[in-house]
Image (cartoon, rainbow, N blue to C red; front, top):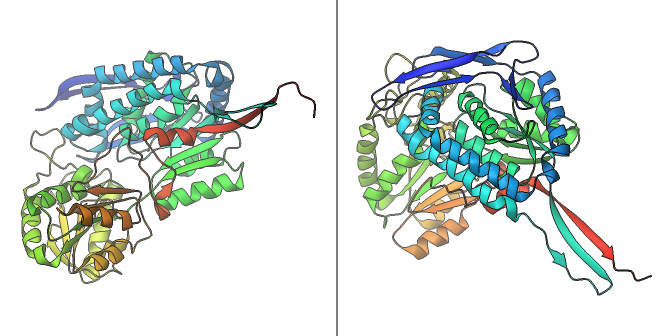
Length: 500
């Protein structure tokens, strides 16, 4: 039988206890994986094992898919009306609210983000997202098309069926809510694979899904590795759609697997190398604060991170001095400490990857203006890092680092910065700082990115669509737009009794 994980939190910022089953969640039950193997879950603050969770295999994908199809054909899909789907999603949001501190503590323990950020952003936003889609569940409808008086023509927006959802480790609970919300609101059944690095909040959420009363098989959770379970989901002939958030490299593999099998529908929310443009008429102090948030939020582990900071020459020196001071002031430390802004990177692999990029910056001739080194001797902590004196061909300028590493680049005029900002294979997000609203909006419109923030960075809302241009993805998360990813449009034409 799958084991029970119990943990007592006794920290300066949170005291409480959590206890939950660590099995796979299939057909409304927590179970062992088919091979009875487990995965060690590591605390990134210490490098030590927190617990073990059940490991899924491709056999478990088959079992979960069968359960999901049974639910779709009997108790969910077109068999559960919008009002019922809305009621259950609303109940899930209320249960999440009741357990918000517990969920935030598990997220901080498992992922390394600070408890404060997990409370203020991750759990709050996740609850808002589920509640938002609860409001949409009874508003999924088509249209009537006028043809002629002898016919009735209309469309139905029907659930696609069984969808596979693969989420990353940087915002585990939040990404789960982004995926579950629109999929369940539109009547689909889900096979969800969390990251093997950070599955604990997803597992705990399944107990809340169960308590909310979702029919068995509606939501299934498989903790496993990408090259086994993720691959099996992507190529499964009886999964009708895959939604993935993660790297562009893996997104290509999922797209290829879908094309080679049943041509399943896909949505991909992928990487980014977002430009943050600061004009010389910007409020420098505000731009500094936002730039720090843009790159250091979530330890730099955000696909929308403003990692390329373009500063106009007239304020470059002032900005760099103040940005350096701000970056140096950010406390790196224990996720449960009252004053910590940045915790550890999520894993040893990610720590090594970031340090490799820092070394490549040094090797290619960039200047380490601040940081570039380890913080402490235990866990996977990296100090906030600023590079200057870069060139456009450097890896640290072109590739997604996914860590607390920013490059500050001087530019001269509007045409210069727009050319540099768009010189990337990515197009997820961007930001513009200027007190001239015409200049700001003109620049935002010319940037090749799915999101453009003006005088702010990393501002996301449940009702605002999010997604990328170019190699940053296909489709949109959040808002009404996300619902389109999970419905199939059927046209119905009725002859009203007239003979041709």
